[in-house]
Image 1: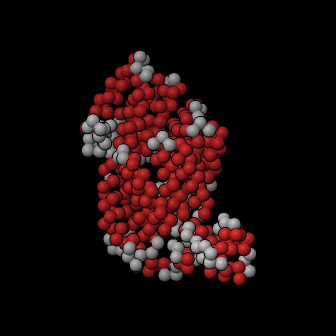
Image 2: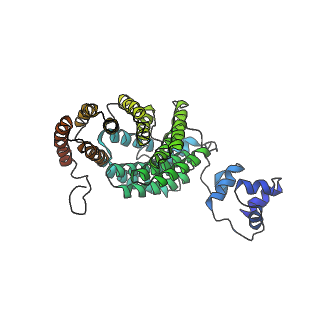
Image 3: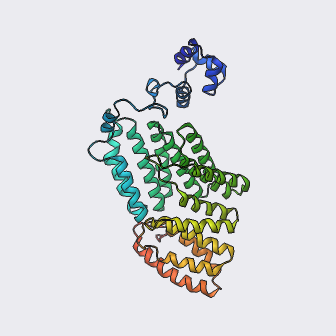
Length: 392
């Protein structure tokens, strides 16, 4: 890198501009240029490549996001996608099945696909950076399925492994998307500070790649949820408004590896944010919209949206509406392989129990418990056991 800096300076680039590009002092730059110190941080290589448009392969990096595709793109695609199956098609098949059946039933299949079909190509000299993107996307998917199965530690490990794979592919949008997933998981495990940090990381990564409004909306939503959980009301409201502005600018052209983020997803997340901000009337409007927009084929998303709607009715003190809406939850497919849905149903039950003195709620809880027992029997192979050996 010292030689690169000397070359740039010799071609008329000032040392001040070089130092600013890699966020170091001019004194440190001179040390590098004079061979008194060595560059060891990968970020310096990435920053100098992006600042002066040096193709990634010249610095030992993956193709940068701003580089045009290679001229032999069709040949490269053939190398990236051997006869054992197209990666994008596999992702779409897993994604469609997940929406219907839940991640618990699919986690093992995704891990096996990664091990058998993707991992060997990571060390194949004929493979290009696209295979790292495929590995990152499928590893992130495995993380979500582990989370849906109630194994959050395993999910965190998958997300942690997916991020460097995305970076190696040069796909910063995918890396930002994975940061959003880590933000979600951090919040689900009670770490609002960590969730906010991951959202900031994702936004910083997204700014370095092409503008994808849906990705910006997802990341601002993650930021808003973390801030709302931390009771930072004004910043949370601003982040939510930024998410809405982003989604207003969305187009039909999506990113192949990113899971969709649409109006239904924004309404669902907005309901949770506004609930945490104790703006219950606005939260109710968003929750109702989320349920109305959810497709019938997205069983888990619809169940989670209905849980949120019942929760908000209870917090508003409208127990009759909570019971009426709650009956829709009882029709949720008992074979849905989502421990996460079961956990949220249990949280909702604890909220309803505090109002069991009201007869309609008491009667509803009887039906609720019958439906829960049926689900517990069908999900016995998925639900993690507590230390005492009983389903947790």
